[in-house]
Structure formats: C-alpha cells, structure tokens
Image (cartoon, rainbow, N blue to C red):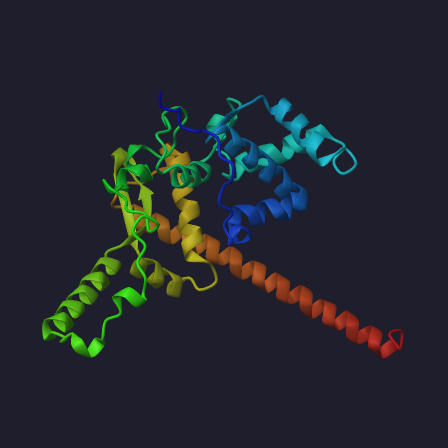
Length: 287
C-alpha cells in the first residue's frame, strides 16, 4: 500500500533577501523585531500544517504568546494587531484571513517549489491557479541511474586529448547552442502579472532592466513582485492588457518617490546628527 504524501514541511526556504522585501520593511518600521517574530512563528506553523492553516485568531495569538513569553509581549491584543497588520500589507491573504485561514500567494509559491515532486492535493484555498503549479513543468526521467551502481575509475578511462581529433563542426555547434541559449534567455519571462479575463502580462529581464534605469531609487524587481502579489490578492484591481503598462509605471513611480523621500530623510537625520556632534565637540564635553 502506497504511503500517503507528506503535506506538512519539515523546513521551508528562507530567502537571503528577506529583509529587502518592502512588506517586511513596513512590518519592521511599524512593529519592530517582535512583528517579524510573530510573522515567522505564524509562517512556520502554516508550513508545518501545509500551505494554509485554519485556526481562530485568538487561538493563534495565545500560541504565539506561549512561545515568546509574556515577559516580552504581555498584551494579546498587540499580537492580534500585528497579525492584522500582516494581512493588511499582503503578507497574508486578507479575504481568507477574515475567515480564520492563514495563507498567501508567497507562502503557497514557496510551498509549491518544495513539494514539486509530491502529489499533494492543492485545491482548497489555492491562490496560484492551475497554470502556476510548478509540478506541471517538471519532467522526471523514466529511469534514474545512480552513480553508486556504475562506479567508474578515472584511471581506468584515461583518454589522451591528442588521440581524439577535434571536428570543426563542434565549434559551429557550440556557437549555435550559445546563440540559442542567449535567445532563450532574452525571451525568458521573470514577472507574470495577472490581468482581467484570466490573461497574464509578462515582463522579461530586459523589460525589468529598462525600468530599473528609469526608476533607479527603487528595487524594480521586488516592486514588481509586490505588484504581482497585489493583483493575485485583489481581482477587482486587475487591469486589461491596454492599461497595465501605465499602471506599472504609476506603481513604480510611487515606490521610487517613497524611496527618494526616505533617502532624503535619512540624509537629513545624519546631517542633523553631525551638527549636534560638532556642537558638542566645540563645547569640550567629549574631551
């Protein structure tokens, strides 16, 4: 009898650019490191269960308080407030969160990548859609040969390079593969934004590079990923093919403006701090 597929995860990927995500930055700025702790505890609990977690908000808050300890967070209402904020900024799907279901597009995307070979039923509360299942693009070879089954000694198969004539056609073939690989890279789509009527707007690497030059103050790739999650979570905000480009430019312009204002504010604070330090040095208090 075949063993049923494992639904929960023993581990989940933690991106090295986790703290570069605008949503995480917003959470840090609003609730500090305890907000991040609350979010990671919830995500870990979700992945232990699968790609979603059906649980009452009060019960989840009590679970978090038991882990962190009331020495650090004594108010359960504060935990609930952090949870609500995570849903407000898109870290959790707002509509499902209102029904006491915790999940998100990002959570499900990472889960889909980890369980790519598992035959897990991903119908209930699934936000990515059938086309986004990474399992559809996986091809498992019919027969896998283990390296331990056919050990080969390097000394047994030593071959002289001079003993094998090199054909000129190999050079041409290599160039052909190189140009083909370059062409496929150019056509590779890195961002797919959902549109109305089930359509998708794709942005290539070159498209993103051009927009990065146009909006240098913001990380365009992460901004577009945030836009993609926003469109997945808000069907009524999706655009058609003719208007999506203008909406993208407006979205990037707003993010770019916020980044510029934040940078100017930090520079002003540094300048003010340097003035204060200069004043103290002049008084001799730092001697």
